[in-house]
Length: 471
Picture 1 (cartoon, rainbow, N blue to C red):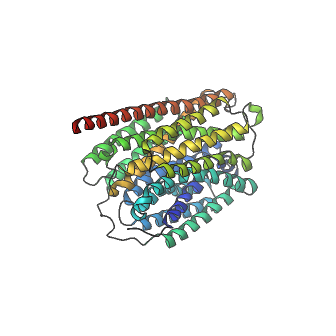
Picture 2: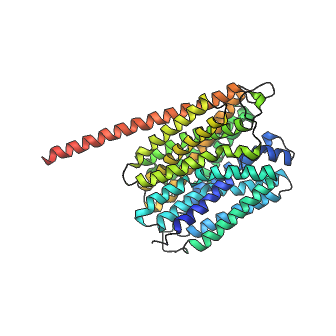
Picture 3: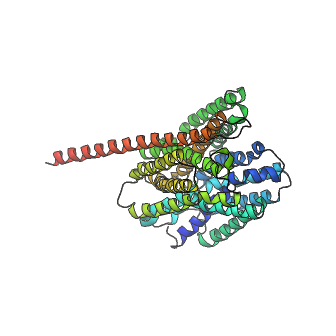
């Protein structure tokens, strides 16, 4: 079924709500700590709880989006996110504030729902470009959301930033109501929901991300960290065994073994980690005092603009990808994107003492991320059946989140290992963290480039064999 031509802008606008809410993160931690009279380490839970809720909600929303009630699912999710923004804006205590942040975690699953809607309503000739656009919407939007968050919170308060996000979500709800066709109960098959699988995956992912997020505070060698990580591995192993036996699993793991899907998912983990290191440490460098030797001493009002080139780069890359998608193999975009991210990470590692260096690094990160993230869902979409698309893309989103968590844990460990007398990040710690990001990018670029060469040689060999047989 095809809808009106405006369906793609409607879906992109709905997906932008994810970027706007996501931007209410790293920049606001110091403001939340001051405003709610908690320590910075405690305020970091506003990131952790949002991540945990998103990790649980995303695969569930992905599976539900494969069913017939996609518009209803998107609207319910947006309403819950709206309520979370309002609760966070009005919260009298930090614990009430965390409830609002947990509800905002549903934004992680919204992109997979919009991609499923595009698969259903967009004409086949434009479907691939629509999916690519939706995939990079969050990256492009973050480059806009961070500056807005910085300006609003810097000139007023953090509460005003959450009110702005609430207003944006309200407009997204109106756009979805008016722009997306009413659900058709016969549009997709209805299967029993895999509640045991969802429970095990939620518990396992939650434990894994909790351990990675809190390992620095617990101690990487502590009994608590070890117990949580071992428990996560055991639960996830039980989930895999259950899904392989299930008739209607939450995520079809057999589909996950297909080459294109494996390529997209493994790249999502690695680049997600490298990107998060670049973004978080770049933001730290921008706001750190000049006395540290590396800081640019930018107030929160302006610090958000350091991320703005990311939006420009990812948007430009997506436009280029849309034009080239019919002419080149999408798998080729992954090593190209990884190569650009490698250049960006190397630049930030070797030169980050001036604002222009940070801006150029973020621009290149945007180009690389836009190319890579545009390719991932399209690769998955061409390898899985329509009824598996939502769950497959949502799993790719989860893996990006897991990669970001690994990036968080690695950057925290490196910074802590090179901390100053008062626990503050040092120049050596900043250099070391950027070096890790560059190393990960180099590794994934080498793997993807080798895969491309091997695949091309295999294609040439098959064609040569076919020509010989025809003769």
